[in-house]
Image 1: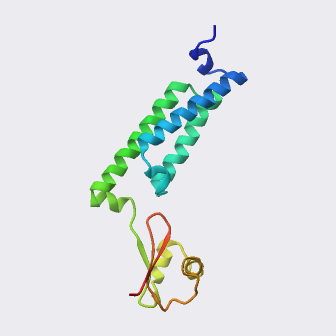
Image 2: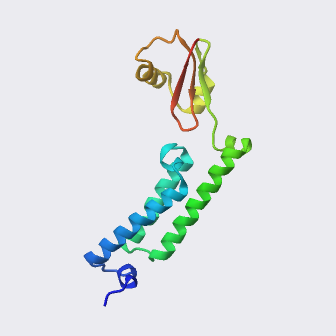
Image 3: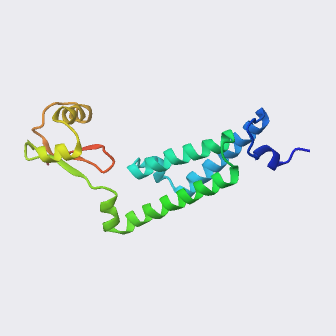
Amino acid sequence: MITLHDLIERKNDLTALQMAVRGILVFIVAYLLIRISGRRSFGMKSPVDSIIVILLGAILSRAAVGASPFIPVVVTCLAIVLLHRTLTWLVAISPTFGKLAGEKILLYEKGKFREVKLKRALISRAEIMQHTRTILHSENLDNVDKIYMESDGKISIILKI
């Protein structure tokens, strides 16, 4: 009789049945981890959120293909998700941690680009104009009050009132 242990045991040559069971289990584990981590992981796309997604994918793939023992992989992923949850909680409640997570950068104000800030954000005027055309459907900056690069790297345009 084949047991669950036989199906998820680490072996060099996995059968199709072992791979299928591992794939299903990894899917279930990933779903549960996402629920624990919270909606933020896949909605906000901050650098920390992206790191979590990449790490979970890389580590869980090792369990799916039998490159690492199944249970230690799941425990490792749970530890990473709990760390992520703790960090995002600290960012939400503490202005100090919030600043560590990143702040917006003012790129354009009062009709002028802020060259030092453009360099800090590693973005050119041409890229700002590309975003302006995409967001406002215009190249005219006359109605623009400010342009920011948000902590997630997206561009926000504030219009004059």
